[in-house]
Length: 580
Image 1 (tube, rainbow, N blue to C red):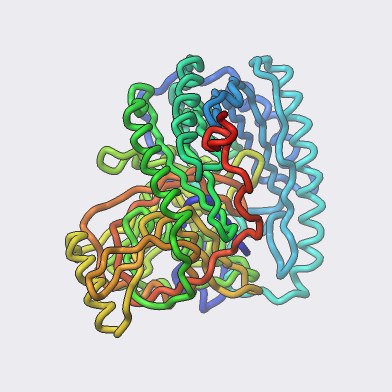
Image 2 (cartoon, rainbow, N blue to C red; image 1 turned 30 degrees about the horizontal axis):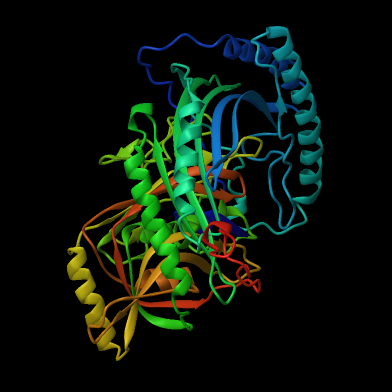
């Protein structure tokens, strides 16, 4: 499976029961924990519970019987302002509601979602738009129609599974139950909303993008401000009733250029905040825009790097993206169960996979790290399970996986990482991936160690990777178990003391088991990368944080390049002849 990400990062299993090849037993879940003071439940959530009771009373006695139904209603309020090259491109507000229904037929051990060999499990409906009004009769009618559609699809899926599972070989991983029994949760959080005056932001995007026109090397500039308020309501037949909201503001700066040989040069930066008062001021944004502009101008003129394998230093943001791609996606629990996956870490729980000074955890319960916001925060996942901090690697040893309600042998329960984009089925995904080191040095000392390693290997230079846009990784069994990460800013660091040289045209490539063991040391300053990760269940907000790392051997290959040359004529504002 190729899992692309625009900017970042994910988690893995125990082997005693696996070797025996027996399904895990599910003890009865504990009683629901007492709840703190609650807000009033939305009328929509009350209606969802009423229709849920009516539907389940009938479908639980049908043939085949439904054993689980879940309704998720997501209300999305969005404001967006976009500008380009000094002018306003768009400015709009929107409000929508989307209903998703999941019906499971069979039992927790074996249901319509079971995947046999190369077969595709039943996916059901992607959901439907519903009116903004809390009209009970309208909402219940939409739920009724979606439930009927889902039940029919699930019933057909279970029939196919029952006729095929006995004649196809099943691996130990595939013998795990299809769905985990979890404690029900009742939580009514306050509903959220945004009030955005778009006029000031319309002026800001004009101002920020106009500043980029000063450079003839910048072919295009786009600045986007967005404000998002999401309220989610969940109700299921286990008794879970959830209501919670999240607010997110984002400002994105993006510029494009082109080198003389046709290679596309892009620079990108984003700000994220939750409180309107925390928005960056014009001075801060314009200063960052100037940094992006100078970097792009330097990259346009920078020399190409030939394929290379040798010492490399990744700054903190670059390290965060690196771990998201190299480790994170392979630590997602569902990948350990699917026979079509490479299952890189499936049988390595309890084994050392990283140097002993490194530990990794995923904590979607954290809103911030220090003063910096973490975009992967959420109180409950998309399967109604509370978010949990999960220790994935402890002093180099693999301990756990990020789990949804798709259990593994030895890992029978979710730890709150079942996530999805609206309209997709939840699978285990990353939230806030944090890399920690018990043996760190200053970043200045880490650079000295890089130069010493360059000399030890008798090389003339090493690489310092200062920023990464994102990348992708192959996790499917029919593909090479490799990753590719896309650096934006790369420097040659010379052993003889010459000044660092900015270069372009490289992608980091490698395989995870080898690359992770090449880490020699870490810096002492954590840096955060916030972004959106795209994989099987769509695009979800994530964060990753890490210190700088020194790697004894990293391989880079030539970046794919466009054959289009830069424009023949300079931009009108920079054409001496055109100005006359």
